[in-house]
Image (cartoon, rainbow, N blue to C red; front, side):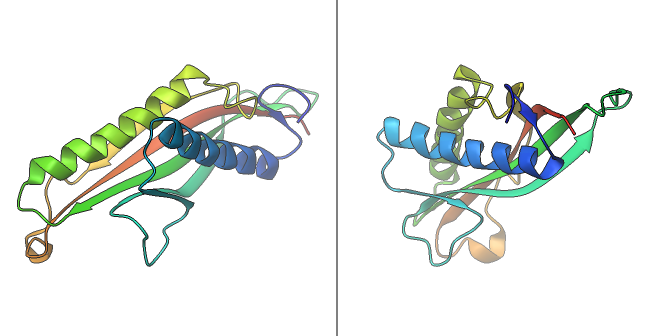
Length: 159
């Protein structure tokens, strides 16, 4: 990296944002005393804990009209993060409250230092989806909540 959010290639920019979000999530959860949460690049099976954070899919798109004569281009990295919480319970609210609690810890940590220690010009949560209820076919063993949140990070590719 030659400066905050600047990278020599789209691959370097994307990898830096992905690694920074993983590190930020792991650090924030550890700082919050959340020691029984799997935090990994991708989904891991078998899981060690009932709560998991997985840094998964990523997309990088160029911003229109930003390619200059020096071949610098602004791009946005969209990094997906999945938060899964499972409990042996019939109380749907329990898993949802826990999942959103974990999301809050991660989102606050990203917002506290949105350059991700220099990996991006800025990074913020962009989109969130969740089914809202455990599928009826899976509800016999307990309840699960999955939140899929996408973080958008602005970067500059310099070459």
